[in-house]
Image (cartoon, rainbow, N blue to C red; front, top):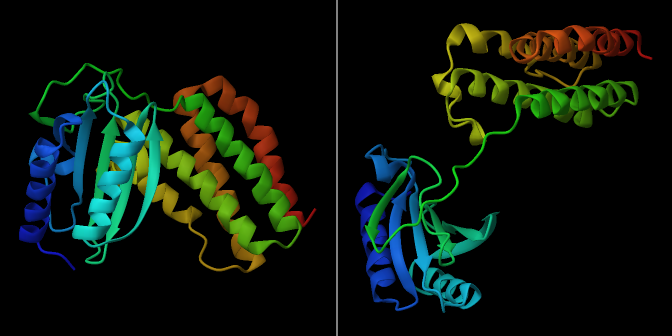
Amino acid sequence: MYTADERSALRDALVAEARADPRIAGAALTGSAAVGAEDEWSDVDLALGLTPDASQAAVLADWTALMYGEHGAVHHTDVWSRTTIYRVFLLGSTLQVDIAFAPAGAFGAVGPTFRLLFGEAVQQPASSAPPPLDLIGMGWLYALHARSSIARGKVWQAEYMISGVRDHVLTLMCLRYGVPHSQGRGLHLLPSVTTSAVEATLVRSLEVAELRRAFRASVDVLLAEAEFVDAELAVRLTGPLRGLTASADRGS
């Protein structure tokens, strides 16, 4: 496990290395450090803006070698957002280090957690939330597959699909209350009276009777949340979705 001092020292070293790299025109803190909200579990989050003539691939390769050679990285994975690549490193200390490599013109805030350290940021389009109707659609799609998984005796797939219904419902709740929706970051901010209904969707065992119970509960909360988005759609979905749970209960 890493300490807060070790995390700060690494972040300072990376910022110094960014200042010394002529291919990097700007850097910013992102994540919790940008808004003074770090705790003992926080990661290192850094955004780097490249110069117009810099090769993103070359900078990425050099910084990856730096992370492995000097800072104890043991693995990494990539996440893309538009033209920016976020390389996420796992250190041997279990510290996560996220470094965004943004081409010229793509360096700037896409959310509220962005604090410029040096260089100039360019205004970026704000990241958009998933459309609620799409979330409802994915919810009933997972419900369809939950029913068929139960019928086929594929208990692990059934658990996966029931959990998928729940996850989309929770995202809908985050959007409704205006809290962060990505990766469950705002779930702790939801009112307990809202999330308490979702507890029943948790699958407590792989027994078929338990899967059927959790499936019914997941459909209940999906329909309830759909009412807040489009009451008429919720009415249209009620018959088919209740039919799914009834079919699962009959074993057909």
